Amino acid sequence: MTDNFQSLLYALSGILITNEEREAVAVRGYNEQLKLIEDIRALAAQDGNAELLQFLEVLEAATKEKISDELNHGESLYREYVELTGIQPATD
Image (cartoon, helix red, strand yellow):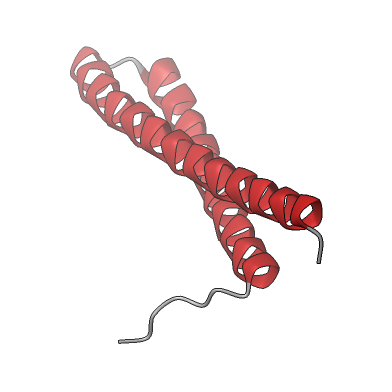
C-alpha cells in the first residue's frame, strides 16, 4: 500500500468519525428541543390551548423520529469506521 493510499484511508476514517460526532451533536440538539416541547406543553395545558397541545404532540413524535434516524446514522458510521480501519473496540 502506498503512502498516498494510506493517507487517503486515514482521511476517510477521520471523516467517518467526524460525521458520527455530528450525528451525536444533532441528537443533543433534539434532546434540547424535546425539553422545550415539554416545557411549552405544560404552559399550554395550563392555558387550555388544545390546538397547541395537538401540534406539540406531532412535533414531539417527529423529533423522536429524527433522533432515531440520527442514532441509526451514527451507528452506521461507527461500523463503517471499524470495517475500514480494522480496529475493533476493546472487549474488556
